[in-house]
Length: 123
Image 1 (tube, rainbow, N blue to C red):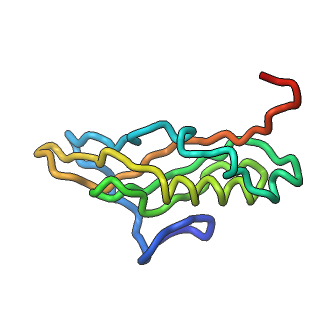
Image 2 (image 1 turned 120 degrees about the vertical axis):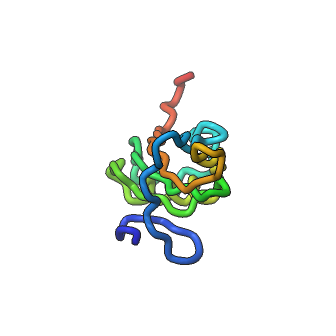
């Protein structure tokens, strides 16, 4: 089952099993940074000038959808951590893992997402 710091959609989800020998891991269809829009920066984080990188693990279904997201390294801002998993869980799509015979499998993908405020005059 999911740890307390996780974000999941729908029914309770169990952790994906390790991939069998000969399997190909799941991969995101786009870079995670492309999922974030300027207006996604959490208002609370903006007010506090919070910035940082969030490490996360996504549990990927055999259909290539995020089942759950777990923060593995906090940015120091709960608002940024929560926004990361919410965005990844709802917007990310994956090429699912494949077994040796080509069958789709559940998997996990680990990555990070940076949240940084642009400094005035910076380009």
